[in-house]
Length: 102
Image (cartoon, rainbow, N blue to C red; front, top):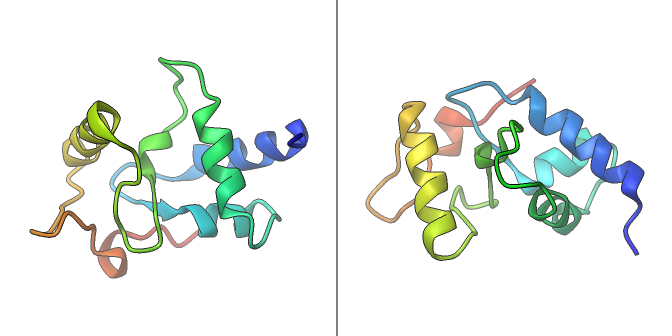
């Protein structure tokens, strides 16, 4: 079972990611005090209710790619594009340009 308190730590970090910036799952985990627990970030974000105000869409994998399947991936890409986050031809975000550095 996952520690529900760790989810709150993760949500607090994700809430701080500004529009037009992204963070990786591993980066969020480290900032939440949960190093090497990137998968737990994914679990926490997956537990969000539909319509959550948390900017979950600003979290990408270590390659700068969307990890979600199907319509969820398309929705995440649309939300990021609306914030002027660009994707290259391979579907990656340039982390050197768009990564959030708190």
